[in-house]
Amino acid sequence: MSQYLYNLQDTIPGNAIAEEWQSLVAQQAHALDLMLRSLRLNLDTLRGRSEVPAQGKIAQLEMLIQATVKGLGALAHKLVSVEQQLAQVIQQSTAPQGLPQEHVTLVQTLEQVISALHANLTIARQALLAMIEDSTSGLEQAVD
Image (cartoon, rainbow, N blue to C red; front, side, top):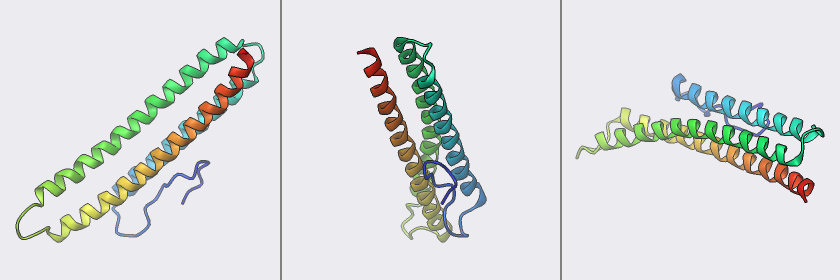
């Protein structure tokens, strides 16, 4: 597994996975980790800024969340691209004699990659929701 704060998967076990797919998973994990760490740091900094009124903090919080959601969307788009590649391989492989071995291997690889990418996005979404909940509950108390 990984050195990441949020237990993101940065490799796919096994030697049979091509470097390009391993790299895609590692890049996604790294990008998600940076995004989540940056958000956490910014939220902690924002929380500690006593000179900013609660309404100002809420506005800044919304901007930080929007930027993070946008980043998650971009990474999710890459996942959709891999899913489309899988669909194309399956569609091309509907010959009556069955799947050629290279297509079987590619389908298995793409399924593993998609699984890892999905898992990472799920972890990131859960972390984002937890940070939002934590941050908004503190700000709601300050507004009340």
